[in-house]
Length: 238
Image 1: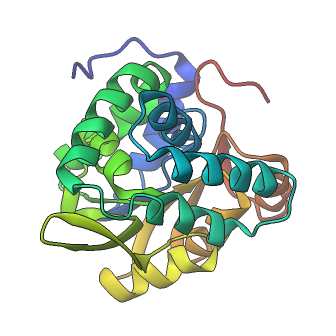
Image 2: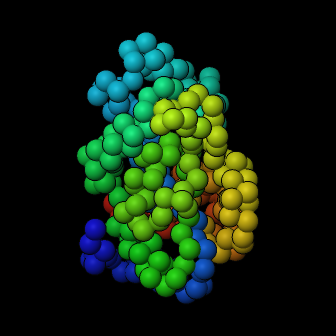
Image 3: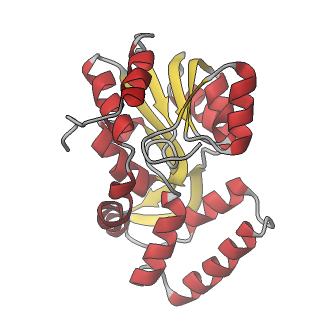
């Protein structure tokens, strides 16, 4: 993907502020931070429309997700169930679906300055990580465009046996679990961290430098109180 992009002066100032701290390890949230929208929810509705889920599973999951949006199902529980609903589906099929989905739905929503930033960081020798509560298949496909290697993705996932997805959760990085996953797998000090929601707070706090991108109102208030850098990508509104 071409990263020679024409960016506004505010974007260049943001990139310069990140590169100025000379990070060696950078961690990124994905939905709302690298691209706009919720790719996990979008993939769920997309795969239902495509008929990838068994009819009874889709019917149950649609009602369950509606209940989640009404506030009756916890965030971490819902993120886990958005993965376990694929029980007994070949993982290869989901990987192929994620490739089609991301190109069709999410790629046009990528924040160009975040794309530019990750490539400049990688060229400088910085180690890049992505942490997300969206399913692993979509996140790995998406961050490939940002130069983040598959092995550096921590996302919602289940155990896979003989090529088939199981209903046994392996990891659901949401809220404090994002920081816990980084401590468990990375085990190093994070230099810079980028997030947009209250669910990113714990991993932002564990970083030497915090960059809040396209924030929700609750995280924006915290960032303002703590003096963290806030950046609104091209096309977003304050």
